[in-house]
Image (cartoon, rainbow, N blue to C red; front, side, top):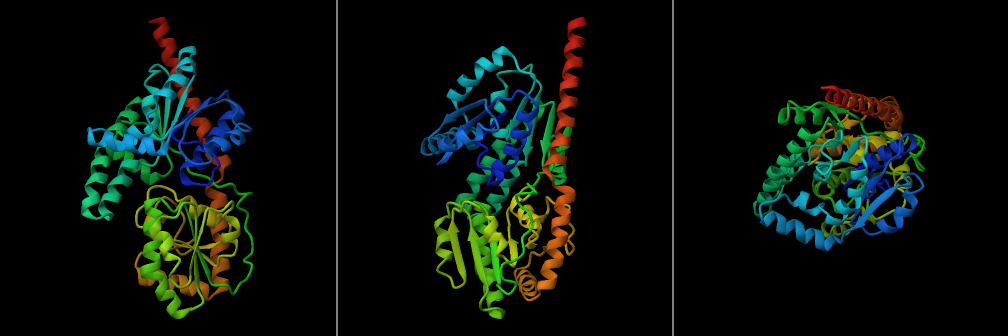
Amino acid sequence: MLTHRLPYPPRTGDKVRAYHVARHLARHHDVTLACLLDQPGDEEAVGALRDDIPDLEDVVVGRTRTRLSALLGLARGASATMTYFDSAELRARIAPRLRDGIDLMYVYSSSMAPYASASPGTPLVMDFVDVDSDKWMQYGARLPLYKAWVYRIEAVRLRRHELSAARQAARSLVATRQEEALLGTLAPWAPTTVIPNGVDLDYFAPVPSRNADDPTIVFTGAMDYFPNVDAVVHFCREILPRIRGRIPEARFVIVGKNPAASVRRLATQPGVECTGAVPDVRPYLGRAAVAVAPLRVARGVQNKVLEAMALGRAVVATTKAHEGLDARPGEHLSVVDDPAAFADTVTDLLGSQERRLTLGRAARSFVEANHSWSASMARLDTVLAQVTRSADVELFARSVS
């Protein structure tokens, strides 16, 4: 299995799915996990991950150096994403294992697909999760013109690599039906399967609010990630003042690591708190009356929404944050885009404990029915069995021809 980052600890969107897949595969198969370490704390986290996945091939890459390489790659006509995650050392580390022979290669994220070319006869399962090139295109639509062109160029270049990865793959996986439809428009010939993201239902078990009258609103996520930064800045500028105009004591708590400067500045605004990194988001969601996801740029399933729903929280989200879910607006969560209507919805929920509880209970039931990791991994097992069976049939056909 190849992942672009160490999938541990599983606290961010790019790590949660990878971790649960890797752990599941390691329980039932002999698995080697190969990945890059590019974030502070990764080297310490490797030891903890070995408890679940003993066979690890990890390579440390400096973030400054890889970012510079990505920029140089972009200037030379390459994809910045692909250049960033290209490591000669990781290629060398996995080469002996590929020469010895493996039964199947599971690639998580299109940025790791080039590593699979070293073993062309091996069945490949390509887990796109989301079509990342479309996310870059969305960035280009939101950013100022002097920045937007870079993101649009990267979207075009990355899309070529995504199509190449889909051609290599015996099966392409995505997290939602919407992503499957998008990939189908780009690569209609590619066999695809939806493997939904799950939630650890025991870890994110419902908890009662500590104070039913506490008008606390919470947002969770990595706060150096552009869609999250854009969301909280938008919320604080366009939505929160409307809420506090009716409920002056309302507080907005931004929970997440590495807050950008623009996010830290929000904490000077009345009623706004920025926590930075926390070991566990559950206590913050546990005290929240309402969880919000005012995302204007998004792809796929938002784990922040699923986790809040699993905890039985009333969630107010935009269409972008909701589009990867089959949850029904008005029944399992509230979905609103207009800032004034978003503020009205949050305000109404803050004023009605009964409505919050009703929405929260329905949210938890939805997650239990549709987003358990056990169901998603059972679906993945079926896919892997189909791919390996097809590969065995093809190998036998070649051997007797």
